[in-house]
Image 1: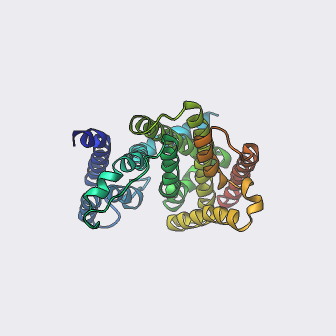
Image 2 (image 1 turned 90 degrees about the horizontal axis):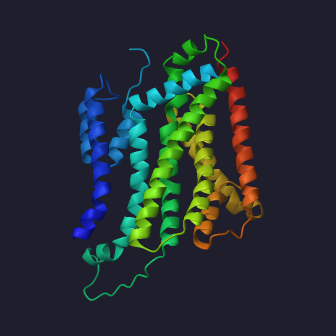
Image 3 (image 1 turned 90 degrees about the vertical axis):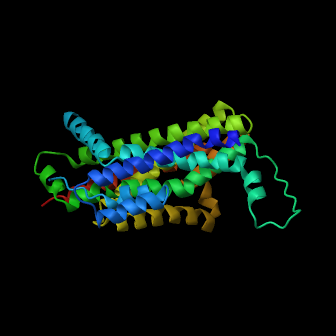
Length: 65
Length: 258
């Protein structure tokens, strides 16, 4: 059992990192495409794919603010 | 050259700002790492699943390291290609739609410089991510399964890098034509899929097509040297990439003239 945990540790760490970065970037963003709370729910509830979805289609990137 | 450096630097800053610099390597690393790990734990997973009748005996042969790495590559081929297309689809379209392109080209900026700054940055980012994840997958394969020699891993790595460059180039090429990022992703995947389809429809030219790169890479992994001619597919792929880059610059020049 310990074997499984040590092997999966990098995967869990990366997944957690992805979640945290997506959350921080979502909360700090002035505006997202669509309601912000929906994105927070998506990032939390769908593992791996949720953060990717946010990064790819959720961010609103206006060059001039 | 100075203008190129400025634009190139801007690309990196932008990638950091939208966190692409972080999520892209992380996602590709996850995709590649999960393959050797899930293969290693497959017997345990099957044992603990409830769908089997009691007393069922499953004997799975332990795959060799080369087979595991080949599986990782084909996993990356399906999921990774989609992720690369998603990551690249926005780069030109967004700037075109929010008007910063117009402002940029009111200054004396060459379209070729602009395209190449984007292309170089994307290629460096993706190849960097692929290097890290392939290295990690190789490390995991070596400790969980059997050793794979560095020379065959190295060869398959170089071959597969070409496919990644091709995916980036095709996506950028399509985004110089279309104005919607969803359309860019759809058409790019369609083009890449039709290359693969072409190789099954006309098997005679299959060895020259870029879709052969994956087969070549997996073959190099398992045997160390391929039975298929490597030079043919290398030449056509590089020529295809060069042609796409050339047409892209020409087409883009036309579309930004106001």
